[in-house]
Length: 288
Image (cartoon, rainbow, N blue to C red; front, side, top):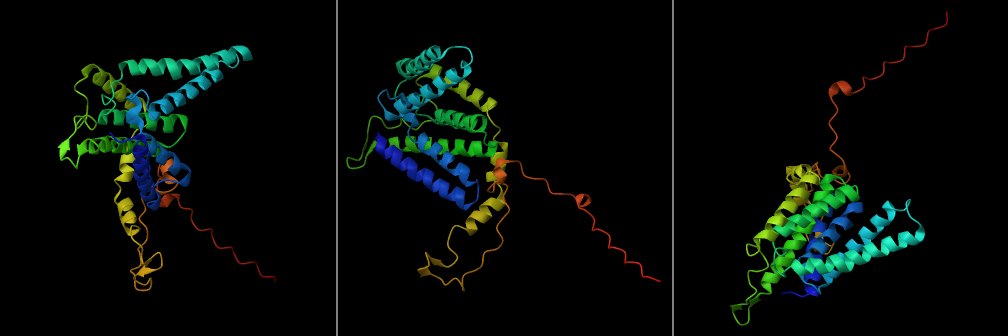
């Protein structure tokens, strides 16, 4: 299997390349691009949460522990004294970070159900839910973050499979085929439980309809294609002169544009809504 540094490095490159396309196509505003990019990087290490001593597992449960402990603190802030709140805050953090973490690894098997496309879909749904419900992002942005998460997750699984091939010895290692799979048929109970949780997350999460319509818009891909290569010289040094380059046509009006992904597209105004021109002022009366 690939090590942590390889996963985080390749995941960053893949997420950065996707972010570049996203920015070039004016898909979302700059206030959201960092968040969705980090979702992709996180996805590139999340499959190793089932590895007890992995950094991904430690970071994940530490983050959940901090989040839960502050939720407990804020919910009970008006009910208990400061000393009691300290105990609740610290206790909930320790329980999640060490108790839940230990319980999870008693049942989790490395390269089991978490090394599957089903698990990637689960994390994509969780990401979209967090973006929409907790961060207040539009459902289109939420599912863009979920898409970045899923691609990062799949990148991890593909890397594990690549590292399961001994190219020098021209042989497949025993781990080949255990990383990239749709579901894990070896553990039907765990797989069924994950499928139920995934369906529940997708049901309560934001609708992917607007996101699907937006990224499939023809104008988006036309505009992206027009921006893919420079009009003239590359970096002003090599290539055609800008004077001889074909001028780009007007950019396509995509349903995903900077700003519009954060709200539903505005309906075009009807002719009847247009204000009629003000009547011309009557000429001033002449003195007799």
